[in-house]
Length: 443
Image (cartoon, rainbow, N blue to C red; front, side, top):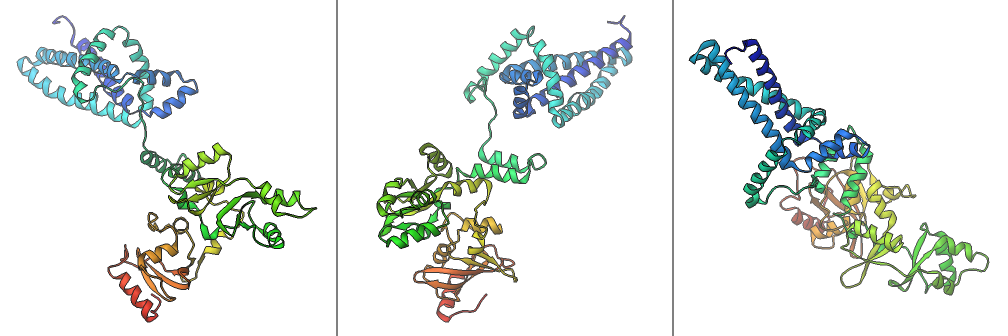
């Protein structure tokens, strides 16, 4: 090699640095590239994306191929640098070349290409895959040998990732991915996608219409009352029952009944004949399963029952869809009937209002894992039936009971969260009981 000019050696050294940088950068790019985006491109016919995905089907062989090329380039760089240093400075040149090589490899063959690959992985991964597709053929025996040895060494730890395995996201990871994609997906669509994810977390009990709010037709009523009830109801389908909802007969399509019997008048027999048998759902069924159940049985509503078979409430297809797309009820005053904002920042809330709906409207984040309604929440915290003007602090929010009826809280006034309060407060329950006894003041 003494006859080879130094400029030629430096040219070869530069070429080896380029190869080392290519192998280092392409390794980072191929391991961090967005596979879901590549799959989308591959479905649209992008050959480079399909080539990358094929290489990633066998990650052990791909890594072996990359490291084989990278190590070969680095070894040749070390040998050539030592020889150049010796040619220029003798024995001292070897030490100088070693120190300079360490810094040069770090900057030009590791940090710079890997940083570039981390920032723009797809830009490097696509052309690099064409190079590896060619190199894989002549180097296959060495690559295969390296993969076999690696697999044997990793066998005690579970082995190498199975062929064809792809990255998968958990529900929470997918939720996080949606949260950081606001520049790609609109907030409205993000809320809908998150709503779909939440269908597995919520049960029908969380969104059901409580038993005492179910609007139906009592077949034991007078014929005139039944006809008036059908004519004035705001719902398309209503349950028919005798005496109470526990003796439900079925569901009837109100509009069809009114149209078919408008000329001859409604009869109990006609209603019972037209009624469709009720559909029952356990209260612990997740919303996604309930949606599949409705689709399978071609239903639009179902009665919610507990473990004893007692009817607890009613859920409709509209309720399920609203969990995805938000409120689209035809009644614009739905929230106005249950929640009324006041000028002082407080809210007058109906006791039957769901905690979930209150959180959606205010963003307060009240606990939804316990009682489902404001009435249940207040009774659960107090462990007693309160009198009017009873006050209690719940998760930092002052609650004032404005009206009770029999054994339920009917109307509550809720004030904004107090500064410095993140919970119920140490003696909130005792204060509430004292207020109940002394007809306490508004907080």
